[in-house]
Amino acid sequence: MKRPTIADVARRAGVSKGAVSYALNGQPGVSEATRQRILAIAAEIGFSPSSAARALSGATANAIGLALSRPARTLGIEPFFMELISGVEAELSARSYALTLQVVADPDAEIAVYRRWWAERRVDGVLVCDLRTDDRRVGTLEELQLPAVVIGGPGHTGALASIWSDDAAALAEAVQYLVALGHRRIARVGGLPALLHTQIRDRAFTELCGGLGLDDSVTVWSDYTGEEGGRATRRLLSSPHRPTAVIYDNDVMAIAGLSVAQEMGLRVPDDLSIVAWDDSPLCRLVHPPLTALGRDIPAYGAHAARQLLAAIAGEPSGGGQGGSGQGGSVRDETARLTPRGSTAPPRAH
Image (tube, rainbow, N blue to C red; front, side, top):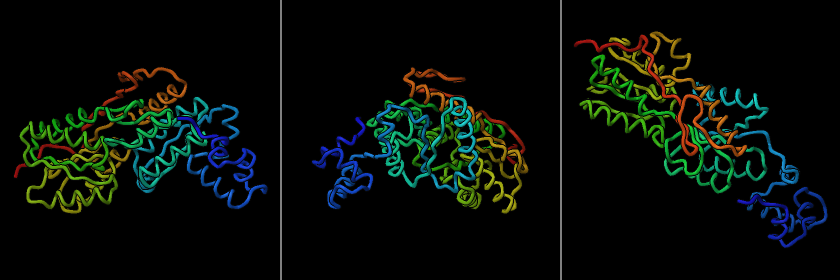
């Protein structure tokens, strides 16, 4: 897709390029009606005067973009994104690249940010998180031909490069471990149900529990916050067939679940075993320390940044460190289970 130019605006408005320049820069020389028409056309086709100098010089921005459609308060307390960004920054700083981070309200706002960054040449490429099935952001980035790496998958990334971790295999390790301890009623507190990685975990959990004959196992969904994770835990532990073990899709919800269990008079791990996803330092600071599925998240971010910089440079995508790749899809390290004090065989009743 061709970036709009001042000539495109002039042609659409039926005026000279000089008149467009006057209008966009607030200078006299055009009527107010003409100025407003030119501004409307520029906005419609995505032309920004701030990109003109860079466009003429052909210079790169030496920056990549990351737009996150998450509440800012969630990002402030969720260790996963902080660790991911730290890994991205470490790789970028070694290459004299900057990270442009923007928090947006929803996917529509995220798409608008991509279009603005592209039109203004603010970034040379973008990282995309929280992949969904039939994700409209993928089509937009393909249309813009803006280099991009999707952190998520496998699949549903179109022609875009991607890096992903095998969540189904990690979840299988956690479930099989709990079953080996003797648990038969296992619950899961999942993340946002619209996200592809949540759906992958949903299917894996349902298939695993069905195959193992765990008929009382159930998944409830939350939003990764401690408040909603705590509410989901309270509902599960108040049910007639309360679980003897719960797997959480992040560590913040797991810590909230630990607090709720203790508030309800249950002992962890005697009455309830808890497994967290994303083994941040928080998991080792609570009592008892949490059994967790973990991997090197800063390295994951660094690998994603390295893959994006290769795409920007026009280099072929490889397998990356610790993974295997084909056609721009890189499988990174699978999360592994670290047992700690929050899991044990269920107490006999």
